[in-house]
Image (cartoon, rainbow, N blue to C red; front, side, top):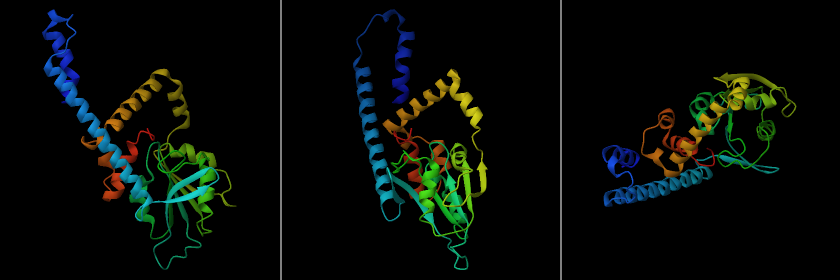
Length: 253
C-alpha cells in the first residue's frame, strides 16, 4: 500500500508521458489513496491508544512515582538496596541521566544489576514522560535526594546528551554534598553539539529527521515496522512498551 502510494505517480508520469496534462485521477488511484488514508487514520488511533495505555501503566502499581515540586511534578523510579546486609543509610546513591529522547526505562537493565547493593534512581527531565516541571536538572536531583534517606556518596551515570545535563550540576552542592563519581557512556561533546547546531546543513538534516519521526509517530507506523528502538529495548514487556511508546510520542519528538 505504502509502496504504491509513494511510487505510483512517478511511474505513471514516465509511462504515460503523453498525458502529462491530465489532472483527473483514475478510480484505482482514488481507491488506493482512500484506502491509504483510512489505514493511516486507524493506525494513528491505535498508536494513540497504546500511548495512553502506557501512561496508565506509569500511574499504576507497576509504574513510576511522581514527586510534586514548585512548578509541577517529576516522574522518577527509585529503589533502595535489596540486600539485607547493606546499610541503606550509608549505601551509595546512583543516579542515571538518560540521553536525548530516551525514557528513564532505558537504564532498566543496568539499574536492576546494581539494585542489590545501591540506591538506584532514574527520572524524567522536564517535558519528558509525566514530568511537567521546568526546573533545571540540578534542582530536580536535589529535590529527589531529599526523599532518599542515605548519606552515602552520590554517583551519576550519564549517556549521550545526559552529559550536558550533568555539567549543569557537576560542581554544585546537592543537599550539602557533591558528586563523588561521574561515569559517562558515549557522552555528547558539547563543542561538537554547538557546531552541529550552528551549521545550517547539519541542523537541517536533524530537523528533517525529526519531521520524519513525527510522521511515523502520528501515523503509528512504528508499531508495525521493525525498528531500532524496539530491538534495543528488549526488556520485560512493560518496560519495552514504555520505551517504544515514549520514543515515538509526538510531545517527546
